[in-house]
Amino acid sequence: MKEDRAARTSPVGAADVAATRQRVERASLLPPRVFHDPAVFEYEQAAWFGTSWLYVGRDEDARETGEYFLASVAGESLAIVRGEDQLLRAFYNVCRHRGARVVEGEKGRLARFQCPYHAWTYGLDGTLRRARHTDPLEDFEPLENSLVPARLESWQGFVFISLDDAAPTLAAVLGDFQRRLDRWELTALRRVRRIDYDVAANWKVIADNYSECYHCPGVHPQLNRLTPYDVGGNFRSEGPWAGGWMVLTDRFETMSMDGSAAGRGHIGGWSDEDGRRIYYFVVWPNILVSVFPDYLMTHQVWPIEPGRSVVRCEWFFAPEEIGRPGFDPSGPIEFWDLTNRQDWHVCESVQQGTSSRAYRAGRYTYMEDMVHAFDLMVADRYAADGVITRFPPRDDKWRAGRPLAGSAGAAAARADRLEA
Image (cartoon, rainbow, N blue to C red):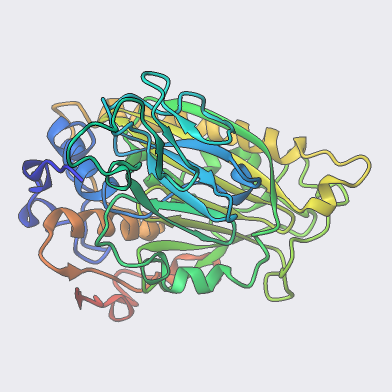
């Protein structure tokens, strides 16, 4: 794969993010230019989005032979298709002849790939099957002119793609996050709604916003009524993710406009341990996973420009609930559509404000240790010095753990710095 080596040199050095890589009581937020600088954006696209495992869809999006959907990853168009052998494969959406897009529709079903320009034809396994007037050519091998594959792996119904042939396996990357979610039966869930939002904010601003509820009393009064912002807990992570849970107050069943689950049962694998919890995870680099007693919600945050992102939000429910007479998912969807739009407003405000000459990187509050956890993933990758900076979650920030005076508990926040 062709690669711009210059774009792989980080424009943000270890010294630039040294203040972020401190424990949360001492740390400062990321330097504001990382939300605005085109050189930083280009580096992230090449070095991060061009090499990471990225969630692009679900198995259900291409369930039958010949079904396909397109995905855009780090500026590349890819076609994900179900082959005659029932395997999912991903190919660069580029004809090997003159480089035209082989597939133009966002999704559909086909018997073969056929380039609309000169009708070069490829099988569902990517093999070149027909290319008119190439028989007389010297040293022309059809197999060597097949569609170029990209790596694809699935887990719990999620389809991931990596453009990096040398990347570790998806399981190796997800690590303990995979183990954390495997007890729930997410594979069986089916999408009932998708909404794409065009947000005038950097993708990291959106991930930071998702990682805290410090803003919830003022920005999300409806949400804060269901799950108070200071009741919950966070997980200790060993991989490229951060997350935790919040707790529904006694009179509510789930996150919806009225707090009712409308008769829906729990998702498969929900246990007494889960109880009244609502789970939130941010997974490197751009996946936001929210698990509720009766449904799953995901956000994919796709960078378009330094100050613009497209956020794809999807809601998934159990098939038996979808098939039940009277099934109505509008409560959760309307609730989160409202919450999303509230979030995009403040994210766009942050994008505008951090461009001011008056702004310098601020300090984290004690309620923002999960924002700090995500920013550490960012900072470590900018620094590219082989060090993973990780701190235990601050359990004493929650209402049940208070009060915390001064620096009490600081010993529990010692750094756990691992050599990569």
